[in-house]
Length: 239
Image: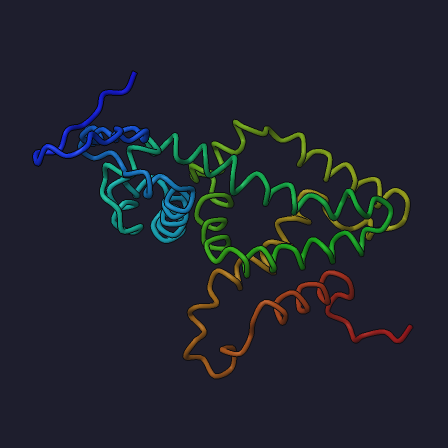
């Protein structure tokens, strides 16, 4: 039964409020983010900062403290989400690199009997990936193409090379069926494609003061790469 409250002036008793009295919030542990700071946008911001620094200076040379500063957070904030740099890298592989890897593999699945369409689509997807993710070209050059790249090693451990073998097998089948130039070396097709797209994209910032190349963007790079791959360097043939 609720207790009545008596006023100091001796007036009629008032019924006690039925609303519970809120207790004071417990003290927050030092370094732990507040509720507002634990939203997914803060975690995503840390991942974006990590990608920026990894692309700029490499994974091995980037500390969690530097990632915190790049994101505008304290080191405690980073450690709340990621205890180690390896844990953060595993999250990046799962949430950022794996979906991108899957997307780049789709052209071969969607065009199993049309190598020109498959390679053309893959070229454009690589360029679009660089537009959507500015860290992609530099990260690829630094961490994937390089034999010493830590990301390449972790991706290899996680996914193996079954996907690569399947793609090379498809290229060899196209050659046997007469759909693709038999003189092409299957193992060099992707390296050539990356050289025509990723390298220009990774160095495009150097062209800002070059009057001959400063207006070259993703569309021009994709068109150039497709033209070389499909038509070679000879004059264009009228069909």
